[in-house]
Image (cartoon, rainbow, N blue to C red):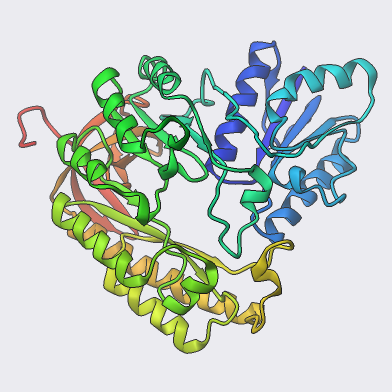
Length: 429
């Protein structure tokens, strides 16, 4: 039996998709590209915006049209919201049931009866979805947290994934030991990763300390963390383990305007955000800080947008992830007054993306001549691609061992690309 998987969501969705793929492969299934004909096609849906939901529906209908005999399964956030527009699928599994996909496929093959499992999320425990491999990826991922209690006014995720919950600390360490035997870098991921461990009376920093002390993993990368959750212990650990904890923090901002942050229900002001990132830089010296930025939130005037861009410049981010606001039915922001026209949201997003490109060029140019460590990834046209500790994608001439941490010197930034050379053992660290 052949299967394909399409992930339309975040890194957590991607991790869960790989976990399901591992389980199917262990049962004897063969994985093929989503463009190929398969006996079963699995779509990990996203509900973060109406656009994301539409993509999920479009993908389901495309598979139905191209491969009518293929078993279709939709899983995850949009399946949990369950607005009835995915009912063409053979199998619909909400957030609580996604780890039952393998048995549901087997059941459908047996009796060909539609399966619908979308339960309430109240009291939902952390589901131990674990992957034995990551589809030839150069690094591993481990979901250590799920759910969110923050209820930002634009976000559907607390309703789609439930409340905060975490993997038990000893289980994290056990998994990290297994991962370290195969991978040199691991990304710790979650919906609200910085809130890890509240139910166990521990913090993300305490967990990281155990990982550093009890495992041999070469490098840990935190997928994303809120500014209010970067405690002094985390900064101290990054000082203590400069090679083993990536020098990159992705810290969501969403807006650089205090009035809009308040309307979004974000738990900080621009001054609090700025003061903390300056403290991080003063403590760590070299560190890359990136952020998420939303444009065109309800009530965002031209002046507020200009204020946001000015704040972004002041912060000196390494790059931005830019999103135009998209209404999500069921969230307070969708019915707020003073909605910004879609065309204006998109124009503002273009401006922010242009600023991101400029900031990225400035950041990368300043790094020329400096040393770093990359994880070797793909090889193409005579060059190996990899990411530095501070998340710069670099090109190194020649074929380097896939997935290995390699010392490099950053040589030049040209045509939007950073080039590096492998560093000799006797060169300065």
